[in-house]
Length: 225
Image (cartoon, rainbow, N blue to C red; front, side, top):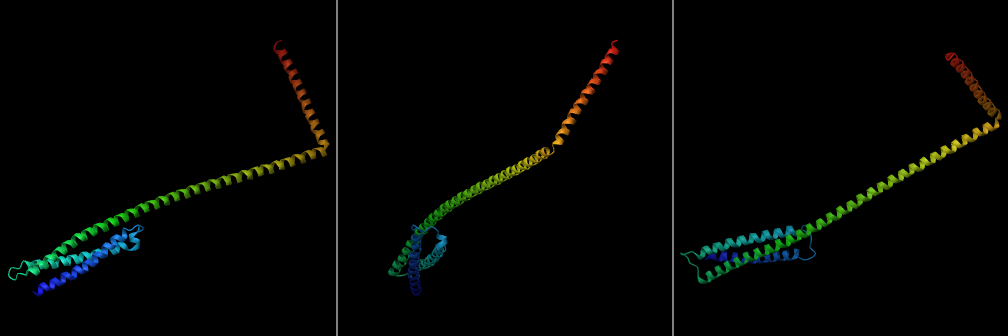
């Protein structure tokens, strides 16, 4: 019966370890589903959950193997176990089944908590992305407005420079005209000379016109004679 005693002690040890690990695993599920925990990965909780879940699963598998070996002993017809041994084997089997159900329920709770955290994280990321996009759009619009203001300022500067240049040219032309009038006023002989030239040109035009008229008159008289 040493084999039974060994398996019995092994089951009790594994049950104790499993119960402790399962409690830690359930506590993690409660922690990550607590309000205010919004980024599981940032806090390292996801890796911790996976490690504890793997440990619990390994302990449950070892406990299942030990229970299978006890079930084999219970079915041994050559060396049948006593009633107390059968009750102990059945108790280990019932505990194992309870642990299987408890682990399945705890896994479901952990998965639900992680899904909720991921959903909240995704919503927060979408909100941050929207805010970032809106901020970028406002900055881009502000940049376009600043560019338009700069273009308007450059156009106004060019207009002011052109107006200043026109004013300078007008002043220069006025100065030239004043000087020319002054020159003409200081040299009255030039005005007389210009007047005489104009009168002579008009007299020459009259003489030429008269000669042409006389020539036309004689030409017509010759033709119609």
